Image (cartoon, rainbow, N blue to C red; front, top):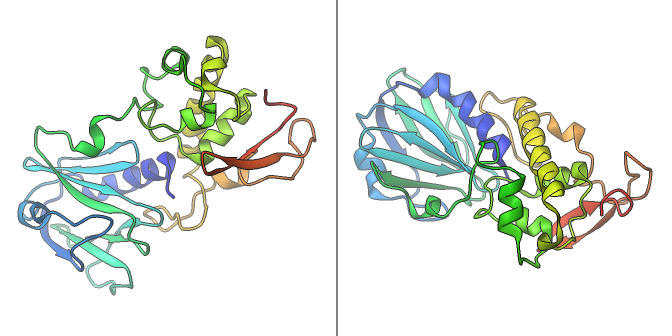
Length: 270
C-alpha cells in the first residue's frame, strides 16, 4: 500500500502539471471504486480550476472553488498525467481532462482506492478525526507520551493509529522503532517521555528521507513520472526477518503485531 512518502511523492510530481489548470471533462469508466463515486465529481468538477493539490494523511485533495476531489490510492492505485492519445489500459477507471490537453488518469487494479467529494468549507468524515501530520511541529515526543498514558497496546499498533498521528504505516513504523531502539511489542504506556522524543525524531527523519528518495518500491508503487521509489534499498528492519541485525548481527525476529508483519532486533530494541 502506498504510504505517506509515496502519496507525498505523488502530490509533488502532479503539482507542476495540474496547479492552475482547468478541468474540461470527467470520464468515469465505472460508478465505484472502494465506495460509490459521488455524482458531484462529474457534476461539479468540469469547468473548475485546480487551485491547490494537498495531502492529508494518505489522501490527496484537488481543491477547486466548489469543493475538493478526495482521492486515496488504496493498495495499488496510481495517478499519472498523460497525453490525450495515450491508450486506456485495464483498470484505468477515471480521467480528468485538463485545459493543457493532458489527462490526469487514475488507475487502480484492486479498486481499494477511492474518489470522493468534499464540499467547500467542509471537512469530509474520513478526515475529521485524524491526528497531526508527522512532519508538523505539533507532532513530537510530548504528544506521543501524553497520548500513550494508560495504553496497554503494543507501541507499534499505537504508532500506526491514525488518530494518534497520520501516515505512519507498517514500513515506516518498523523502521522508526528500529532506529529508536524500541521494541514494537512494548506497551505504549510503559515508554518514557525521553524515548518517545527519540521515536518522534526518528519518524520525522525517516519519513523526510523517504520522501526525498521517492518512497519505497514495494509491490505496485510507481511515482507519477513512471520512476520507482528508492527507499526500499535502505530498509533496515522491514521485510528482513531472520537476517542479521545491521547493528549487532543478531538474527532479526518477525511476528504479527496487530495482524501486521513486524520485524525487530531482540537485542537492540527494548
